[in-house]
Amino acid sequence: MSGRTQARACPERTCVGCRERAAKSDLLRIVAIEDECVPDPRGTLPGRGAYVHPAVVCLDQAVRRRAFPRALRSAGALDTTDLRNAVAGKAGTTA
Image (cartoon, rainbow, N blue to C red; front, side, top):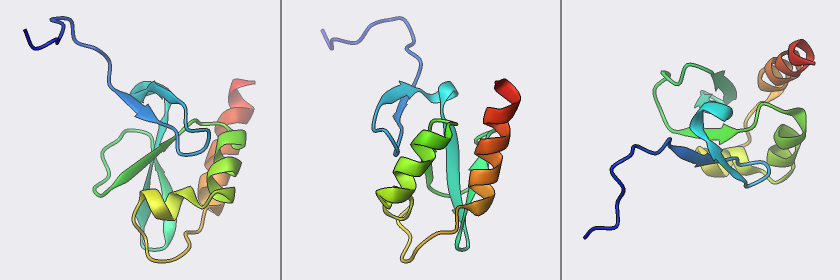
């Protein structure tokens, strides 16, 4: 036996901020376009992606740990201002 179950499990990803595993649908995909981190809520933009919880706390941890350049394999620092505005706006509408 291969040890696999017949039921399809939901895919999991790791948040680059808090390093917790969560369902892919609970996380926000981030891609690097030029020297900027861009949110990809639909998950359709080309390129390597990193996942983060759509919360300012996780975003701050990822920026502090320099996780985005490492996860996206970027040579230099990435601008996260638009990403921060998007996450802060999404957090403000749910509260």
